[in-house]
Length: 214
Image (tube, rainbow, N blue to C red; front, side, top):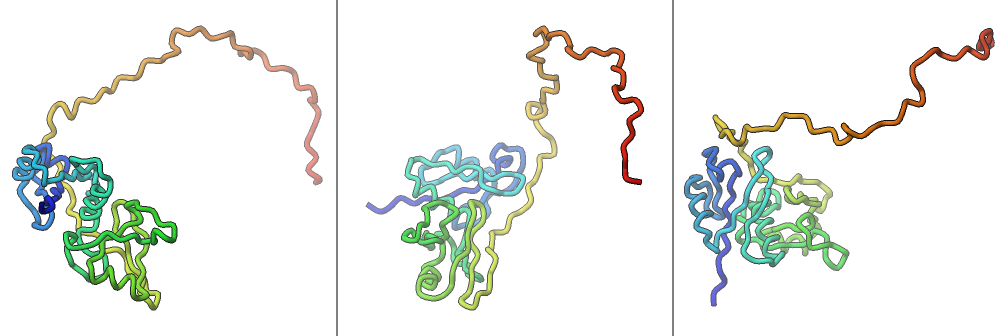
């Protein structure tokens, strides 16, 4: 049987909740109306995986999934994080790219998001046959590159649009408990003060002065 397609839908949290009208992004297609994204998420189609993003900085918060296979979730995270081949100037979309260890497994590299890149087939081969080397990555930022001459190229992170905040928040979101927490020691008796206020003791050396050598 043919493999089942796995398509990511990146949705801002506030948009999914219906508080803003920010567009979602359909992997391999582009922006889609928030109403369409909500419908796809609500239908629970197995081919679609929801990616929620933080309204403060666009960082991914959670990837919806239907299986426990970590490698599949990592590939989904890479596709969402990198969006395209991370090689300088390359725009090949992530659907065609290959997961690659930045620090080779044989050299102690781990299979974690911060040690994975997703170059296109051309630049994957280039990395392993020339002096081009990827730099480190992070969960939210793809790797940069170092040329054979030593020149460094910063990672080309996908553009991120600033969030749209709702014009009016629902009442439930504004209900904040401002009362002071109850003191757990309020009814616990304390011992008498061993140093009560009273007259200060007499100076044992009333005529003593500091000799400064002057």
